[in-house]
Length: 418
Length: 108
Image 1 (cartoon, one colour):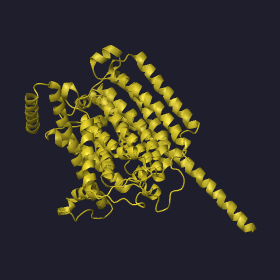
Image 2 (cartoon, helix red, strand yellow; image 1 turned 90 degrees about the horizontal axis):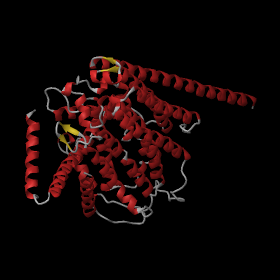
Image 3 (tube, rainbow over the protein chains, first blue to last red; image 1 turned 90 degrees about the vertical axis):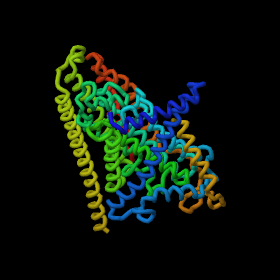
Image 4 (spheres, rainbow over the protein chains, first blue to last red; image 1 turned 180 degrees about the vertical axis):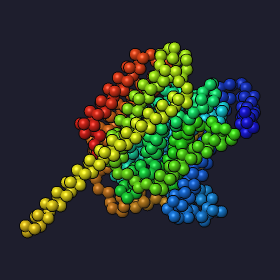
């Protein structure tokens, strides 16, 4: 299809051929080694992108805050991640005497492993994917929630009050934002009729007689809610309550230093990048795009999503814990459920294929018309939800102000009497 | 993938443990609490709110697990199944509203 992709496939085939001929006595061993090699490449990619991302994020956030950012190590500070790495490697690493040693030392390993394992199913180009699982979306969401285990391990194992508080907050937050995320992947799965990430991308291209419309145009509400829940899931600012420095020092990783701290950091960034990749796969069409090679398209899309993450981090203050829970349980979840019901009905009423019309009835429309109808419905739901929430917030704010005013008047009266 | 990731990260940890200095002292090994001495046990009772939220989460997570297979087969569903599906989701919506009314979702 395009030269770079072919070249990669040829190299991959060549290496696989060598391995197969060397280990010809045991096909199982050959398979295992091939998969191991692929896994090493994926892990290296993730770890390298982590180094790049820390640099990019520091530069971008610095620019937003009118600073220069790292500029000492190497040209433009480009060697900063390497300097950080050397520092992390040679730092002394303490295990508090009161800590639960096993749990404490295993936690950073667990979080890094769960973060890296997500990359096994992400499709980078046609044919370039760790394993094309037919339950890809499900796998990503399930593995993504594995970091919760690591965080509670770290918080509990440290035997530190700040760490435990941070871990509790995290679990409540991550567990909560899982729900809107799941509910907003459902419309995409319904439309694509598959949970495999490759199938979902195919549905957004011109292949197999599809119209080539990114799912963002079908479900803008799902995209917005998924993006915000994704930020909360990876516990990035403005949802970084678990490491609120002004309240609980650094949350669950208070006691960690050196390489173990670095692994927590790696887990966070690699997870955030995975969310960016999954978002571009589900809603922006993944590697599909004209002219440019698929890798470039995927990196461009994921990079754009990650830029939004950095932008939000640089501009928004941290939310309060009750605001965070209210946003999730009283806004995102009900809104997503209503949206889901709407999507179910509309997808059954307006169908695109004659075979489907013959099977279950409905009105036969063009894919673009279907997209337009879905877009209008989804956007209207979002606007209506925002309007309702704004009204509720206004009412509660007015009530609060009322109470305050009455209290002030009472104080004045007692002061006057005295 | 899991094995490789674990191996790679394990090697990093071990390499770091060979490289770094190791000079533990009593003050260093104390639990960090901004310089104060720790009072009492860390592993104490926690807010019941976390438990309630976790329960609500379990309900919705299982719901999602049940909905995913239906979503995959969505294009072939007859209308009766679709109505059942909507009823199922509506019951969950009502459950959410009930939890909301009961104050399970409030955080003070």
